[in-house]
Every structure is written in structure tokens, then in C-alpha cells.
Image (cartoon, rainbow, N blue to C red; front, side, top):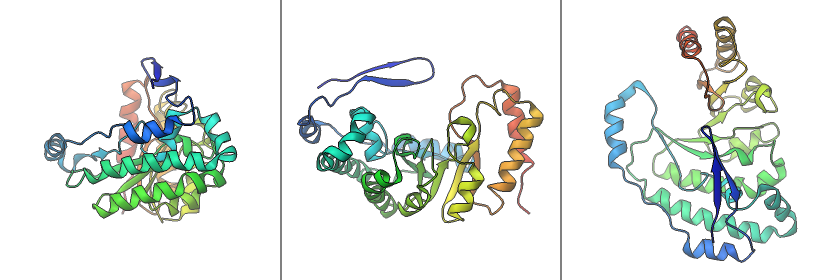
Length: 269
């Protein structure tokens, strides 16, 4: 079994998927190795950073979530069709990935992470329906989050796409934080404050900043205005970490300085 990737300076994508035949999932279950985690470098970084930042951890795999990882092994379009044509096959694949991820999580015990990221964009409601999310994401996400909580970790669930229609599923998967609050201007299907209103402080929030139309191409004045809008409309009840909703690559340093300066103005009384 082989897979191929291509990439540029900004990202990597899969050009040939590992799964070519249904029976390939048996080979994945039997032979795909699970990485072991070395806690020592993280402990050193934790001591160096202190309270000046957040150290994120991860769950083994091409993506942290089981469904999202599966979408890196099989084309997402084919996998969606398989949910209707052969759902038992999809669940077998997801269960095998879950077993491996739980094995990795067990090895994280004692790691000094402030936050563990799970999920991934393939579970967004701009990719799959809420019904598919409920069946093929929620139970596996919940199992991962329960295992992480048992070890004392906080969990942030990453949904870098649409969240409309899956708000209760995100809350229901047991995460502590939901990210990235992608606004409509960069492919989301609701504004960050709309999502915040629906989840009503049941999870903390990270994200919301349009990293391109605002942060990269906007003026310092528009950046400041957007930062304050997010703080006032998303963060007014606390439990909010202002962040870009995705990677930025070509943002001028002066725009980042304007972003940071505006964020410093936003304080709770």
C-alpha cells in the first residue's frame, strides 16, 4: 500500500490515497504503526514558555479525528458515498483508527500540554451533513475526548469550515473549546458571534479573525475595528481566545503589529 502527496510552500495535499480496495482497511488495522510520544522536549518547552503562551498537543494521525483521518486515507467524496452504500465498512475503518488513537493517547500521560487539538475540517458542515456528523464523527470524537479528559487534558475541537447545524454536536462531543469560528468571508457558513450565541458559554471559543480579507489586506484601522467587534460580540461573556481562523502566509509585519496592539486594548473589567 502506498500513497502520494504534493505540496507547495503553503500546504500539502494527497494526490494518491492509501485505500484502493475495501479489504485495504484490514491491512491498515493490522499493520499501520502508531507513533510513540517523547515527553521530554515538551517539558523543556513548557518550562521555557511558562505563562507567556499556550502549548498545544495533538493526537496521532494524518488528522486528529477519526473521520478526518479517514478522509486522508480515502477520497472524501468516495467516503461520503460509502456512508450510504456500505456504512458498516466505514465504521470498521473508524473503529480501527480509534483504537490506534486511544493507544497513542495512553502514551501522553504526564505530557505538559495546556491544550490538545482534535477534530479537523472534514467534519465541517460545509463538507458533510449534520446527520453524517452525528453518526460518523460524534461517537468517535467523544471517545477520544473522554480518554484525554481521563488524563487531565483540556480539548479543543478544530472545525476550520462550516459549523451551522452542528453546534449541538460540537457541544455534545465533550470538547472544552471549539475553534476556528471561520466567518462567511473565508468559507464558513455563519459568523463567529452567531455560533457563540448558539453554544452559550458551554464551550470556550478560539478564532474568528479573517486572516486574509481583514488581517492581510485590511488597513490598521479596519483590523482594529474587527478585533474590537470580535471581542465585544464573541468575547463579551469571556471564555474567548482571539485568533485567526486559519493560517496566514503573506501578512505584512505591520498588520500583525496592528492586530496585537488592538488586542491589547481589549480587556475585561
